[in-house]
Every structure is written in structure tokens, then in C-alpha cells.
Image 1 (cartoon, rainbow, N blue to C red):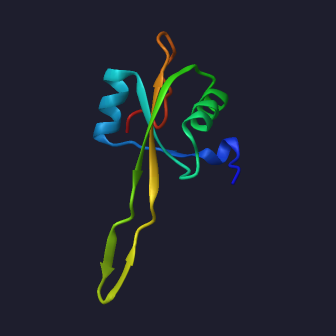
Image 2 (image 1 turned 120 degrees about the horizontal axis):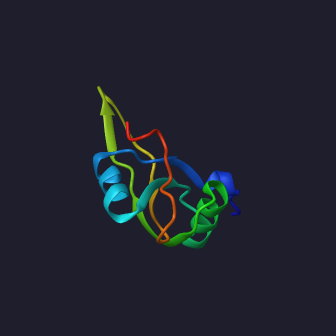
Length: 98
């Protein structure tokens, strides 16, 4: 299944851990499409943000079971990508570190 360039990156992950990695390791964290490969993620970030990417690491997360009273269901499965920028590249700014 082909995924468009703008459909690959869903949203930036703005958490304490994500911001710490951003500041110390020159790495940004995104939620990405589950079907996206590392190569597709790299090309999408380079195209959208106009930066050079050094490496991409991904992690799969399975949806947790949640309950609301008697009703129960599962959260959706999702994928996280750690995108390390090449040396000398300007850091991507999103939401300016809430």
C-alpha cells in the first residue's frame, strides 16, 4: 500500500523524553504511518522540512485495552520514528517546546 509523502508523518511527539532527545541528540520524534518504511520516513522528512537526515529508528506500539464503565475496547496500534538530523543541520521547530 503506497503512502503519500504528507501522509507518512502524522504528528510530532512533544513529551519530556521527546524534547530531551531533541536537545541532546539532534533527533526529532514523530508519530508515523504504520505502513511507512525507514526510507520513506527519511525522504518525507527531507522533503517536508528541507533538512538532511542522518538516520531513522522506528518502534511499533500495540494498542492498550481501555475501559469506560462496562464498555471496553482497544486503542489503535501506532508507530514512532526517531529521526536523527545530519551534523550542521538546523533543528526542526514544531510548537516551540510547549
